[in-house]
Length: 509
Image (cartoon, rainbow, N blue to C red; front, side, top):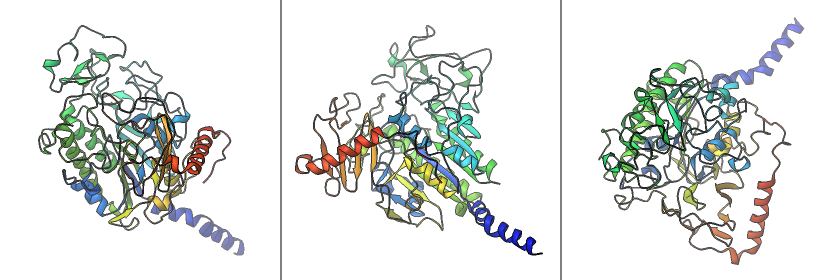
């Protein structure tokens, strides 16, 4: 009898905590926007456009004013967010072509695999742009490695981006709707047939290219790279948001009987911006503004599905963006001409591709009714690099810190119940910059000051730059000469971060 009671006590007290944690673990939905800037959403202060569903999310949760992606471009941000390792530590993690091999090694621990090990059903829907297979793929056969090899049970992908071939969807490693009698070929070096390109017949396009996007024409829009075949499988841009949003909702519906993790990577508002007719012309700011309305609709569909399934109090929703905003990113869509008083970067300088704040300071909204404070604005500094460690903490799951060396657990900060965030924010745009408290440091870097095609201020300078963001959010006044000790401190810390060994760290909870 005594032995039985001891065993029972061990079971209750030794395992009861884990059992309780397991039954209380929330679903996690990560909505990852594309090229949406800090100032693009109405909850962040813009009056030029209304995004009511995102506002709803902010009202029922916490909105961060110092939320950061890791890089000022998409592929490295996505790599860092999923792996917990800064992309600059690995070669080949820059912006990928549409036929690149997968840059996250198969079997490597990721945010998805951590959630999967914790008993979650895991899915990724939308833009991928992390490469597939070994590169130079045969798109007419299943392509691996892919999301399944890094922790996703289900995938429905835009393989790269909307402006790059192949312009097809992939579901669980296979091109959707492919006709075996019309095989797909992809090449990024030379044309594959004698069909006209965007460079040949720009007058026939529904949206003309401004720079770089002048190869194969799909759905009246010319792209980067060449593609032949696969006519029945090619997407229709106007339907893209509907297609991927429906797939995201369907994944949640199929998975509602167990905890699920959904990584919903929208294409909006990346180029080409070709919104559905429901939104075309509705913003008054051209296709870019219309695509913002479409993004907000997608968010609304996700929130409505969560509510309809009575999962609001059981679901943690995180909304953010992969990098800052850009206007002309390759197509003539009047994004700049119709901008009016709207400021996509908010009060910040730069944008996509930039070392300045607008390159990596992005919207970050977190909602979990009853757990995350409602209608709260937090100035805690939080980086997407910490999603992996923080969500591992949430679900009580260990992870291998030797492969996620840069992720730190700041769960209470993410949930809006702590004012303590990470000490240094690393911002990557070719070179890495640092923020600590109100100070932002950009080391000397070569290169032009302005991107000639996108007109983005890049933040390059032969001199060190130091800004006090508390009074100079727009980074207009370089005070490096006035604070040599701070410059030295930041320079040394940058050197340490660049040189930190990533193979000697021990696993941690």
